[in-house]
Image 1 (tube, rainbow, N blue to C red):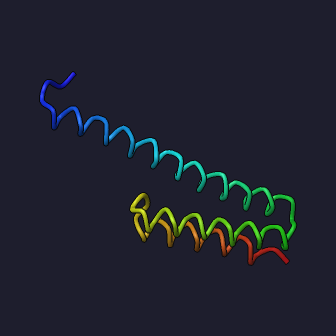
Image 2: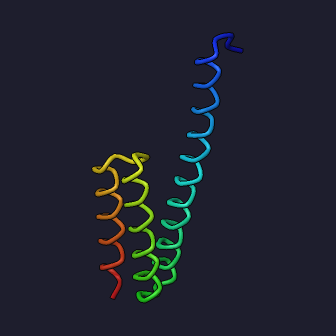
Length: 87
């Protein structure tokens, strides 16, 4: 354990940020899984709605600095391509 006051604070702050980042990543993963499940079921309307929610979650995570913008763009592109492939 750290002895210096600033080091103790850094530990607390980094732990808090890690927890926050973990919850945001979890929300993104859940949204993406919903899109994948709708694609597997072949339900275009549900997939479209789930895609909209997933893109929103990904954009929020990117804005908070949790994902790099290119990572988000790649994920959104792949999901959109998969949903559009449904007929």
